[in-house]
Length: 559
Image (cartoon, rainbow, N blue to C red; front, side, top):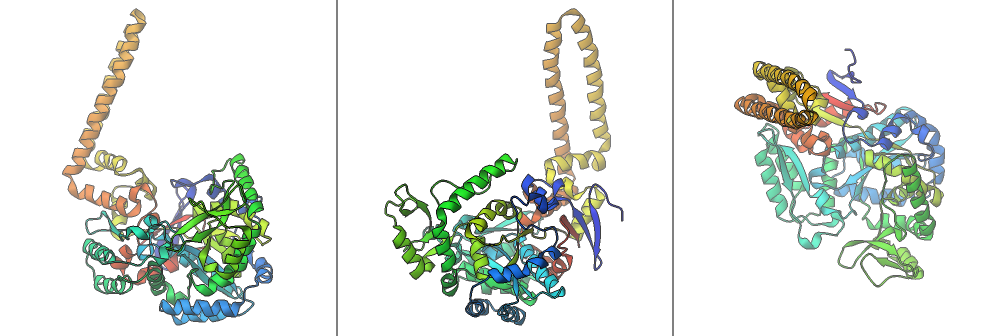
């Protein structure tokens, strides 16, 4: 097949895939696009960046040398965590492999969203899995690790998820937490009966298929009242990815907290130069023409404090040198804080700029797979590595997919639509289809009338201009009104015509809802359950087969 408009056709085990440059998709930042194009050209912000996976092989010795955490203690804790999630034999084998001092880890992670959150959570996991496999194919011992961000406290961000209902429209499923749970680490929030209502509403909305009953039973058994959100997330991702040996990490684990304490202490000691370096880096990025990253202020402190009632609160450095929980008057002296980190590390968790350092302290991290925002964060975060005296971990963009079911592919073909057209939304796409396929005669009539009116107004303008320029100016104002009213009438016709042809309108709206919901990428909105319900467990295998880590485009998979 020939390439068109930057789209590169690919075939993987009989599945048609198109690779689309991110530069042609909406919502992409300049920093992300420049990093995709050539990370080496941004060495100032991404030290040690490489363009392809094989370029990481030379980092192995440096990574192993920098890793000092006791692997035996670490792996015992990982075994405990993953067994609680129903770990597969492949996952337990990878944990044993990690005990070997020659093994490196490929990391990724995500907030613990309801039912695993958006699709890109799955794509992150698969990216790490395939990367670790490729390292092993090149003779390097490597395992995939998924860091569950159970300590983040933005509950509203993770409590909702979306599926496509039987009418082709987005349907929201939401967990409604108790008011007292807001501000707590999301992983510790205990599911209440509202999760059962969310499951019922979701499966009532989804089309009934041969896979629905078993899928509903599995989700209901995992996402049950009394289970905390972190455990439900871990069990679900283990169920989906266990056969690939994905190792799950819950940083709330007490043993992991003890192992992380040296990184917390180091961040405490270097908090002042870290803050200054981050602020300077932010200014450098802005001067280079890139957008602002994580806002760093003069009172920044890299750790969060967990209160007696379970809330996670940012720590801030006061002018008097004391460290205070945000919004509180009472604070801690340096000595008090140091002592608490040493004796009670479970009361602390890293902020977004420190988290990669903590991950790399615990694991021999060879690389990290993140989303576009995380890739951008690393340009700022690399300064934390420098201040902490650690080798900077290269970041890669995770795999990015849009899954096109056969019915939507037929709609695109029938109405001569490209995938990228859908981001314009139905208010733009449907009128084009109306005039091209449904009623081209009336569309041509509007065009002819508009041209004729324009020609006649030109004649009148010419005559008035020779007589009185003020009259000509008045005509220009009225001309704009005439054009506006004709255009408004045309849009009303297009809308009504689309409504009268319900089949076409429904098909196009369903395609947009599934492939470009809210004019965004599918992976940022929809949950994996939509496709597991429609296509069954083999959907995960299709995604696995479609991963191409050296492809820097967005992959559109036609099923």
